[in-house]
Image (cartoon, rainbow, N blue to C red; front, side, top):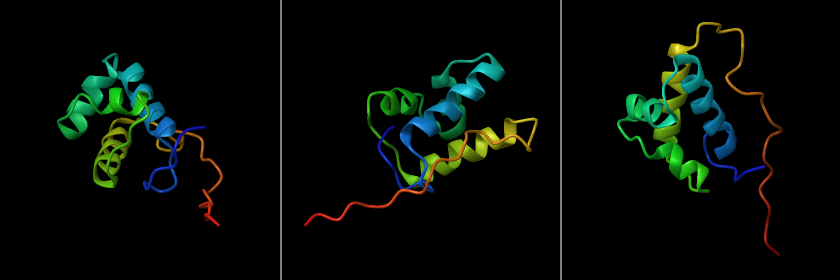
Amino acid sequence: MGIIVPYGGMTNHELAQIIEKIAREKKITPATVTKNAVGNGRIYETLMAGGSCTLTIANKIVAYAAALTDDSATPLVQPTAPHKPQVAS
């Protein structure tokens, strides 16, 4: 499923899906999407390797993707159930 990261309960996988969707639609690489969105073309590679990014970076990527998406009625990714943190005993 992916690690839950602090960007609104979105997983790394879901953020990567947004990047991939924009890359397909615009016929560019995922690295170009993140470079255009936040000035760093390695974010997608980091996410795919199991890493994460800051809330600020994630918000910029989502905002960039939303600005490029023609159909605002279609969500960028399908929402998942909210994450409930595990409490260590």
